[in-house]
Length: 91
Figure 1 (cartoon, rainbow, N blue to C red):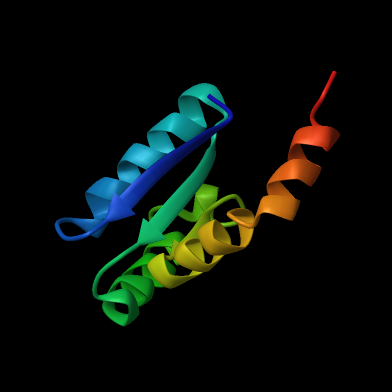
Figure 2 (figure 1 turned 180 degrees about the vertical axis):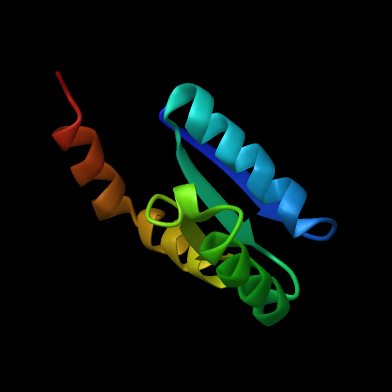
């Protein structure tokens, strides 16, 4: 897979990161971590973890806050933009 996604709504941040690192190591997938709850706390834990045990994915990890994902969805929902994307991806 080109990319793998973990969505944090609770639970163990380190387990999430381990899953992302595993996919990165095994497949070379781009790790994406969506933070949907306890954003500040989770961001602190992630930043600490990528400086230590998960340093291998530090430069590859994309962190997305739930609000950013919502804004992206809204932006991509506009009819003109959907039409443009369809035109650009035609073969």
